[in-house]
Amino acid sequence: MNPLDDLFTLKQYKNYPKVTLTEFKGVLNLHLGTDWIQGGMRLAHPNEIVFDYVQQMMAWMLFNQHPCHIVQLGLGAASLTKFCYYYFPESRVTAIELNPNVIQVCHKTFHLPPDDGRLTVIQADALDFIASKQNSPDIDILQVDLYDQDAQAPVFDSVEFFQQCADAMTPSGILTINIFGEQSNRANTIANMQAVFDAVVWLREVDGGNMVALAFKKSPQIDFETLYITAETIRRSTKLKATNWVDDLYAWMQS
Image (cartoon, rainbow, N blue to C red):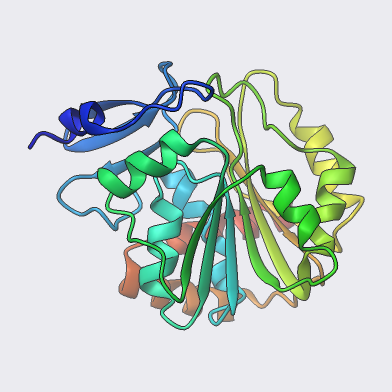
């Protein structure tokens, strides 16, 4: 069956933006009723991360190879959730998505596995979920990619939001966030993160305007020789462009 036909077999939750799909050069793209791409999957390699900015969201791997709990706010096409589930078999992986239409199509069409002892996909508001974790912080890695159907600016990027994120994370926790959109104020978002986290760095812009930043609850010790060795190991085992991340961090340090 053509994956685009799968949408006709799914129940539509009318109170939420509808999911639409397009295919281009072997990549199945997810949209929320607009032209903005919310995520993609290479049909021949469904567990591969297609877009460079989504790969950059994994840059925390340079600093933590054994997280206990990875949380994704915003499911998209489930690229990050699937990747973390398959490449970190000892980790718990939790994804939070408000739109049940997105969750349905990810399970049906984007090869998202069913929940089990390690994987949990929750239909909920990301802010409510983060607030619920503040009294029992156990998130080692928090990946934030929250956009509405128009993708004009991040849904949450205030000091209060980042403080709630930090409060839900372990002392060595790392947050990655995609900053994108015509109405985004990157400087303001970065400043709000810096008001909360011990260290904030960002990578070069890729994929037509996406910029990924990393925030650390505890500032890491950066040894670039070690980082390049780690990056090469990541590249060989996952095909992620990890050495580019270290290049970007080095350029950021020199700026």
